[in-house]
Length: 268
Image (cartoon, rainbow, N blue to C red; front, side, top):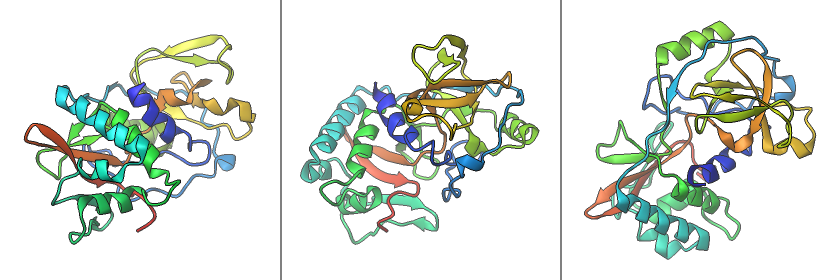
């Protein structure tokens, strides 16, 4: 359930928007989100394509990281600002977004994070997203902040192979996602009782949201398989790459939230 909880929140917007498009160089993040795709005007991409293999996002094996994530999730669940403040670095919080570091050096880490993730207000949605980060066991070293680990981690893949596939299909990286595990089931209809037509391996798949689907199909995502056939998978079983990331550092025996990479909240 750990990574799935986070992915459910990300994937819930896919029928109205597209995936965030990262650069193809591993470890880099997009400077800004692309304009949302009007899915009612999306092309019908039903041509076969060559698979681009991937390696699953790496998990952080340090047991103390799991304990830290538990504290983070609990603070987020209770919307406990005081408890959350204890889990953030006292100095040097960063917010990497377009234009550089957007964090206010005059403010405490908790105040910067509140702005970054939108934690202000009784019904602030940022708390749910923060809880999702707490559930995610993956992480990868930050290329810009030595010693920092950022999550969720992206999968590993061959950038040249991906570029070749994009050119061959006339598509954008924003149209592609990846299975969160090997063996994800593909069904012929957006129905959990529909027959399984195949199982996905660890390779990228093209996402083709169906704007004409009934509301009851909202828990499924339409994809195009490498054979060029439509199929449906559970919406939380396909993840985008290039998500905003929460970053951590090891402070003695404990972990702390050190910063955020991505667009973040619209409050700033």
